[in-house]
Image (cartoon, rainbow, N blue to C red; front, side, top):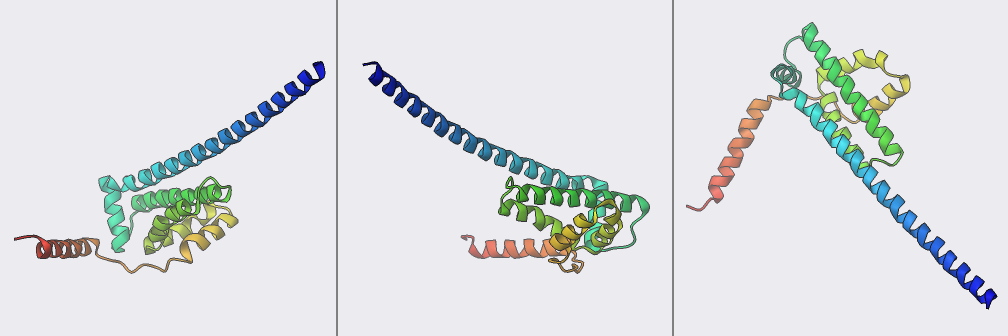
Length: 181
């Protein structure tokens, strides 16, 4: 009958609506996963770019000076360090915002903080950070101090070259002790 046909078509329409909603839910979920993956990839790319700036000879020399806390920085070195630390601070603020809105998970946020904490523990870097306060809002300065300065004590300068040689010698000694004759 016409009434049965109408009821059947309403059931089919309801099933179609439910199927469409399930499909839409799956698409939204997949879109969120893709968006988070893109954010993580962009963060990784940014971290690599920040790290690669020190592969240039001038910046590598500056990094060595900052790590070893050697001598005074000249105006060009201070300007380069200001730029790098500003970029690092903005990167952390961006990671914090992405974490807050759910685009960056806690592990990704901690990864962004780890390298920045290490760098901000260096005396030259920390002193330079204080020069940058005027370029950030009071809330940003408080947040960055809470995330980067307070959890990381001021680092004691380390001779990275000597430490690297020592680690290499230990690795070679351990390898030769376990290598077959």
